[in-house]
Amino acid sequence: MRRNADIGDYLKPIREKPYQAYLSNALQVADILDWVLKQLGKSEVWQTSFSISEEFIRRLYFIEKSGLVTKFNLVLDHKATNKTLKLWAFITQVIDTTYLADNHSKVLLAKSERGEMVSIITSQNLTRGNRCESAVITTDEDIFGTLHAQIQDLITNHSVPLNDLFAARILGGAST
Image (cartoon, rainbow, N blue to C red; front, top):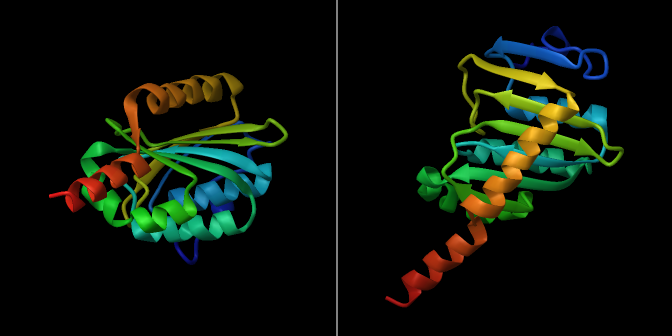
């Protein structure tokens, strides 16, 4: 988030406004995740993106340290594998499970221990930029259910766990 920006200038609390959207260069996905978790409390998180940056992982580290994330599931794209593998050590310290798939979606789901659900569909990768990005945020349980089922299918049937890929690359490189 820009230093002089206030998330309240762009979004209302999720319990007050179950459907909302923004288009701005002031908010980042990590800002939105932090904002959602502060409202939901302890939650499991599912995030899909094309790619991730070291700066975003640093933000996730501090969000995780807050104790509000019970488990973090991440799906990234195969095409960003080289960049992802360079960040592997840091990713595995912050994110519970990371998968690689043919993925260009940018979806963020959070489900609290109390059962509250938030879905966010955004244009932003898990990187930092000064471009305008957009997002739609909703607490609609049907939308969450649909997206959650589709992400679970992507993870279960169409992805490779990053740890497996990394081990294959290390072991494959060591034997040649």
